[in-house]
Image 1 (cartoon, rainbow, N blue to C red):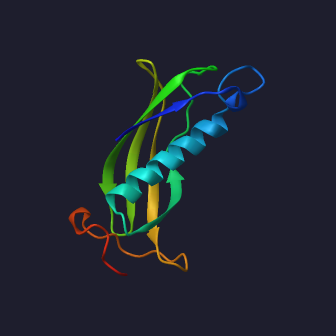
Image 2: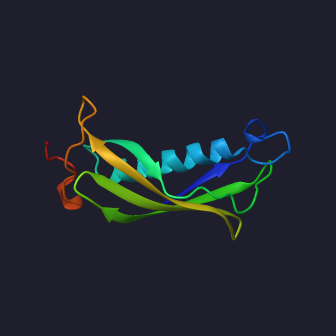
Length: 121
């Protein structure tokens, strides 16, 4: 899956570069979108990111490309590799793990991707 974001002045830190918190928020959001689209009837929450290393900065007006690929489906969790590019240069990458929960926040099994997420508990 591929998504794009435009870096705007409100996203910049005091040095004029993209504030890392915005990038992490976007990565988390895009991984959640990938999981929700793949398993449409499931509720997911993020439980972790593997490694956070900002390889390059991005300035005002940069168009960022987010590429998401599922790397693992476990019994209750799914993991996506997310890479972020500015033009053709990778500026960030991580793996985001989300867990399926019920309405009370308890972990429950993820159905097979072909089931569309209709499995209950």
